[in-house]
Image 1 (spheres, rainbow, N blue to C red):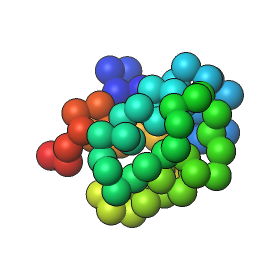
Image 2: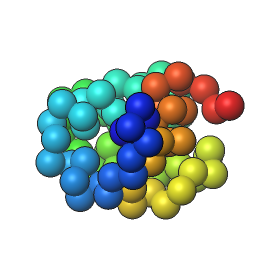
Image 3: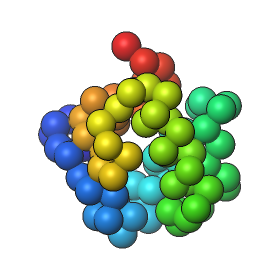
Image 4: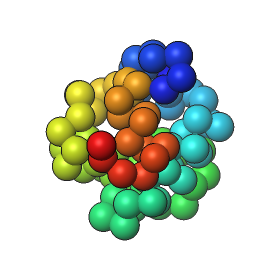
Length: 79
């Protein structure tokens, strides 16, 4: 997502177990956004953590992941 500067709707992201697991692991870098166990399942705990993350960092809609959101998740900090 980040390298290709893509925007993916969460409906697509949720289908990719590997990507979901990566997102969960990245969210774990932020103690205030606990996504639960990184199991690749986009459940209600991961959804809530992602929504809080987007709200906190004033990211685009919590209904998608774009390159800027991916960058913050990957780097573990807001630039």
